[in-house]
Image (tube, rainbow, N blue to C red):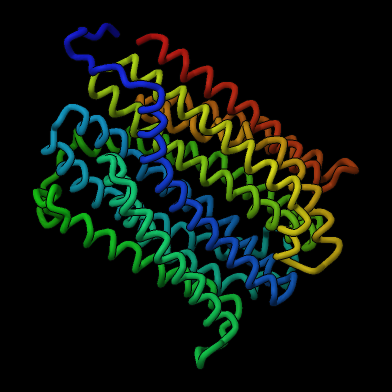
Length: 450
């Protein structure tokens, strides 16, 4: 692609790129960490009830996360389009994108909820401990209903991020996630006169906080002065806009579903070994997901920066923005890897007191330390490519890395070798590394064409 020089913007300094990245990424990282910390709080509080309830949380969230990340990935389709429109100063197009995105994503969220309910009759056939099913099912139903308000919140959040407003969603997310933890404490254990609901109390806490999160974000976007031109009460639709949203959103959803479903299926593999192996897997996944979700914040910033520079027809600043974000990713994932390595015993001890579970979880965390860089780079690579609206080849890469390579290897190593549950984690490390290498190669090849 040849871009006229008169369309290019002044070249930003490296320092300016880092400052812009930090301004965009840090609020998203904090918001993402807030979501993860809710899961961590759920696991810690439910873990106080015993190994079986903790394994129940692991099973329910393993299934729910497959559908959830697909829905969240679909909403990511609006961000690069809004960022590109912002770079071209086309505010009318931004309003049209939000209007269409709201109804498209609402329909998809309802379909996902119905699909989650359809899984319930299949739970007894997953080969898990028979005692888990009656414990897990009520919690799973309540948790599943939260996918609708969560996707609606993400619609407005991703729109605002495309508009380079990442701070507002962070504040709303953190506030509602703190509420989630408080409600967990009240509803799980029945403190201060609240009913003692046990495991299902964690589900109600999640649903209530996500409904509030959506409502507050909706009110904020509608009242923001720059966005007053948006009306969601008009019901005229453009096939072109819907097609653009789905052309990026559906492959983006598949990218996340391939990766997260690999981890979720790995949890089922662990459950085939024992409830202790599943509980240890849940602890290690919880800890590893903290750094990963922060990396997806950097990936969101990458999508905005690349999409924005693409709209401004500025290839040199685009490449400089990419280099700075990838450098930030390496620094962040290295730091979190060292934290996990040196404090793994303390961190795993927050979840359970079963010596067998803690020993296995500690070994899994060591493996997680070694794939930190791969995990971060593949997450940010996906975001950067999404900024190019390049989603088809990355989707194929994630499918091959996780479903063709990782899952068969994980099943074989865990079920047919002496490695047991550790074999699952060795396979996950390999899949993440392959994905990171291929995605980074793909991105720099596309950037080089500019």
